[in-house]
Each structure stands twice: as structure tokens, then as C-alpha cells.
Image (cartoon, rainbow, N blue to C red; front, side):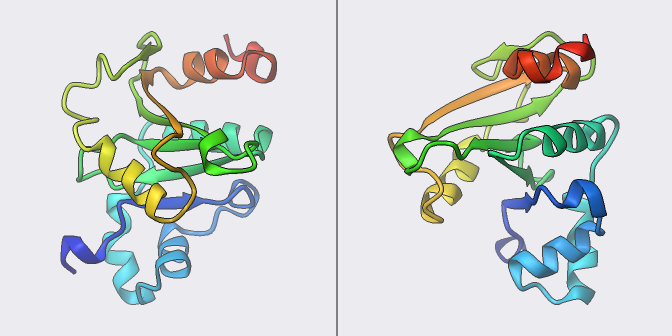
Length: 161
């Protein structure tokens, strides 16, 4: 399967935290990629290390946020988190996240090496979908999953410290 047929992002719906369908199921369902081919590109979206804990913690507590997994072979971060509490795209804030185990939270992409070099591509794809627009606020952020959750959502995740 060529790169152009593989999406930059895979939306991880909030119900996934409770059912945990295989990623190949989400790929096939959300992209139209046939199931037998979705399994082959599942590796590009698979969770490593503490990424699964990050996803489950977020989806269980923050239902007003949409979470997207980034294609791990395209240097566009690990996740994009979009605050959907804004009723229109200009009111929405997106975070392009690169998790770094044990690292302090840094905004602006510092500490990500080249892992966020194509972050603009995932934002462009969300603009094309009408989720965001050119005026939407976008932040590049890196850090440890616990520190990042506590920083972004101090009232929801203060016990993780």
C-alpha cells in the first residue's frame, strides 16, 4: 500500500477506551481501507510504551476533546488533540503532541528533535476536514504523558503527579 493511500491521522473515538477494538478495525472503519490491508498499515498507528495509558486516561475523562493518532512514519508527532468545545473551527485549539518519557512539558516543539517536522501536514488535513481552520490556535507540545496531562488539565489529572 502506497503512502498516499494511508491517512496522516487516525481518529481515536472516546468509546474506544472502553471497548478497545483493534486499530485495524478503526483504520478500516474510518478510512475505507479494506480490513485485509488495514492490518498491514496498523503498525504505523500502534501505541508504544506509555502511549496507550495516555490515550485511555484522556478518552475516559475529556469527552470534549477529539484525539487523533499520527502516522508514526511521517514525523508529524504522536497525537493531535483538538478541543471541540468551540462551536466553530476558529474557536478550537489543537495540540500536536510528541510524548517523551520523563521529560518536562515544553511548548513550541522543543525537545522533539525532528519528530514534529511535518506537524503542519496533520493540521492541514484537519483544516481540509473542516475540524480546524487557518485561524485555529495550534500548539506544539512535548513531554512526559503524566506531566503533560497534569499541565493541560490540572483539575482532572492532578493525582497523576
